[in-house]
Image (cartoon, rainbow, N blue to C red; front, side, top):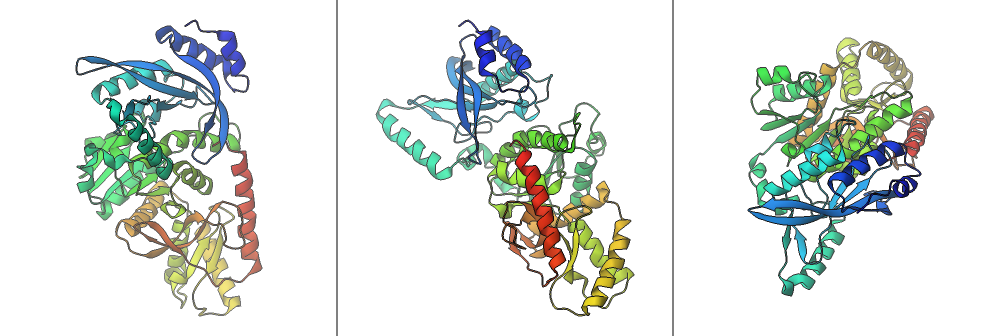
Length: 470
């Protein structure tokens, strides 16, 4: 089929990098001229919609000496080629999806090439070639007997309806050996913070297996020394499927790119998470997602939306480190005669965080304010370095893995607290266990200024979220 450059260019009228996309699609047409292109509405997991270019066709796959034509559909995002396509199988009525390592129950395709997408190194032709290679190892579709077709179609439609995008990963036998690993933890990102988390979690001895996903190339990442001095039960991988059945997945990655504004920096992170989060959620559907990437409140919200997990399973590191430090300063440095467990730092990570007290009041209000001010002054000189954040993350993981029911000030969905109506994540005292947040602790703080500060943070965070493209 002849590729109509001008027609495709018109379809891509609202795309940011139209010329780059057209040139790449021309190259795709050279290798796979039978693909058909159109503009249709894509519905994301959060129910938002966008008109996107997509193309359909079949891929020739040799499996056990026979050639199969695997029908596929590629959706091209409007930020292409800086964001990877969204890829699906497109089975006919006499085909059924074989859920496996690279395909979920809805036919969405997950591959290392997609997960490690980076322009200009990554191109659609390269993606298709990897797709063919992976499908030759594990055929993603199988034929239905004609007598069963109608029943199977109804059954698949019913399953798709009740799961609503949640992948039935457990239906494939390849996962059985992973289920034997009691406490599996995955750290996403091989930078300083990722390595700090890995070392801190290893030191605590809370993981039967720890997977460090490092996407850097060559010796650019910081994982080379971990490879040299191998730690017990630690696996370093670039394949997201290595994370399957993790009880906790920790996001430490940050994508700065060549962003010129703060919004660009955040959007760059969002673009990266758009690829990572759905795949990792697919592999660990019952896990707790802990976000340490910055800005933590917004990236926790993004992770929640992209994963489609319940809010209790998605938490940000928030003000946990500040709270632990503040409690220590009050009880061990200022020698205050009060329980440090009653002191929390809540709200937005950074300058707008708020010290607050919960439980029974053991000192009068004036003394409490003076004590808080002195403690916060001492807290300000403590920088949040990677190793200290790593220790804080390990503390959170310990509470989740061992179901400690310990209270931490972590980023959680704040809707309904302090008269906040928008969907934003802020640090609040939360009880953590195997399912993540089991309860949010209400403090006795009645100061109007606390509510005002939290509402102000919620408003600014919500405004920025509205500008992001999920």
